[in-house]
Length: 246
Image 1 (tube, rainbow, N blue to C red):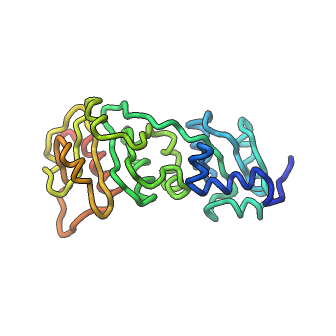
Image 2 (image 1 turned 135 degrees about the horizontal axis):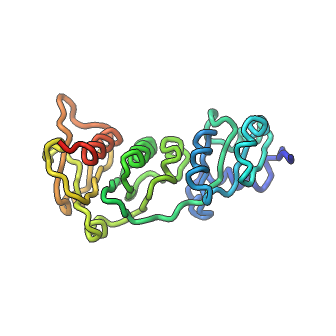
Image 3 (image 1 turned 135 degrees about the vertical axis):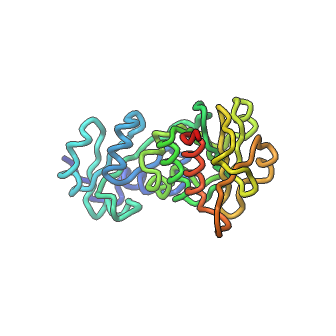
């Protein structure tokens, strides 16, 4: 087993560059960190794995879990230089980005300028749990380390479309359901058979342009609060629209 001990190694430099969106776009790659995250991601989409990278310490513990993949081992101090978190257990996967894909499921969610990486990642996890496809328009980069940590393996389990116009979603047969405080109560409103929930920017909500295209505005009833966190609102809307038939 060869252990890379130099920060000048080409593989080390390449992985370090993937922290920067410019290079993620150039190489069409990203990385995921953490033993459970990498294992779940590798099981879900082994075709996307380009390289499993382990610290020397992690190799002795986890090396036998990744025998089907190309594995690179780094000295612990070199691995620490490239990781984006101190709690990743010395496990990292370099992956090819999945292709952007238009929604195909009967339900999807469109995020309009959701900029917080934690919100984007949390919404992706909920979308996978509920069976929604996802469209991200002008949002935080879904392949940034912060989104990947929050989303876990959802980033490869979910069908994700990047910058797809609401017009095109409507032409595909979806009713555009905008989450808005002025809308009807989601718990009692009728549900179309094929729909796309739209959740907007944390500070500004859904753009007026998209609201003008909406087939319906729906809201979550609230008491003594002006608004909810975008990820919380999206989660409640997805579960209610999909599963609450009363």
